[in-house]
Amino acid sequence: MPSITDFCTFCGQNEMEIYHRTENFTVWLALGQITEGYSLIIPNDHYNCIGSLPTELQKEYIDLKQLVREKLTDTYGQIIFYEHGRAGYCNVQPGEQLCYHGHTHAVPLNINLVNSMATEGLYPIKLNSPTDIFSKYYELGHYLYFENTESEAYMFQINQPIPRQYLRKLTAEAIDRPELADWNKYPEYDTLNAARAKLIPLFSEKKDV
Image 1 (cartoon, rainbow, N blue to C red):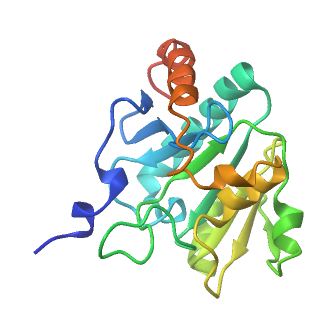
Image 2 (image 1 turned 180 degrees about the vertical axis):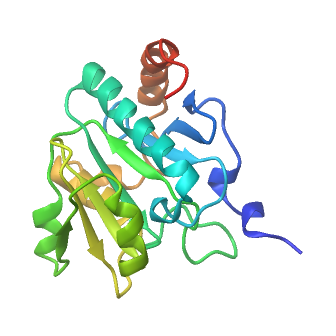
């Protein structure tokens, strides 16, 4: 019987998009580079969302996210993170309704999506520490996550359907390039390749977090 991993984009790995690995995570460049360096932090095993990571992987994830923040900031300037925590349609495959392989988006931009979400009726819950995402997941269930350039992080409980790739759409609109929300139409391969050429040697200076 086919399992979810048979349909999951992130359970397979495209070497042309990867620029860094740790024991349990891989960092990819996202197709549809809204801005150069737009990356995904992805657990190698299939977890529903970042909030559901087991205890033994949580420190590795937090350390890796901090490393990505430091390296991308050095290269591109300020950076934000976001995640659809089992909320909203992502890269859906046949037989799926939701994207069930957790992944965090790391985007080299200085924008704040909290107000945009609040105006649409989503209430921000400010986190006190990086580890709060794990405990809050069990309180909130489906969620959105946003972390600004100052490392201030928020979660938003989701109790109703939201549009496919909702946070990507808000990001593209925030830089007045709404067309870039459609990564299929605008994959931006040249930008991806330019970013990979910069980031592989940068991250090779530190093999593991």
